[in-house]
Picture 1: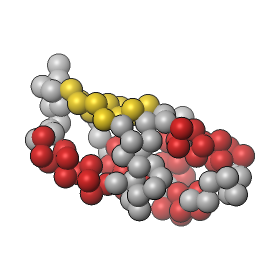
Picture 2: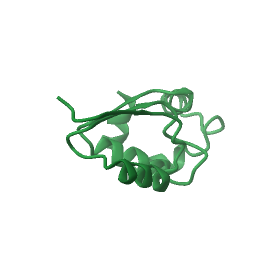
Picture 3: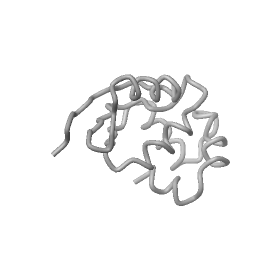
Picture 4: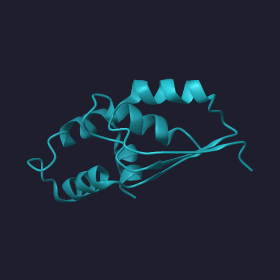
Length: 102
């Protein structure tokens, strides 16, 4: 059972702010974190957010509209709809991309 359960949303690529917030609350491996969508876009560190989340066993995310747009764009290879798809393909391994899209 988790020591504490935290719920947040709308990180929007603000990796440094996320890390700072987790440090301020003393987030640990014994806690749980639920992210209610919109991890990506707007901020400059969406990839770092995704990579950190994927490395955590105690973090669960739900899809937000930004993730759904990414998913649709990825499946249909529609770069015009989601211009940062190239960045995701460059910075994440094929395995990481497939994990995200499951």
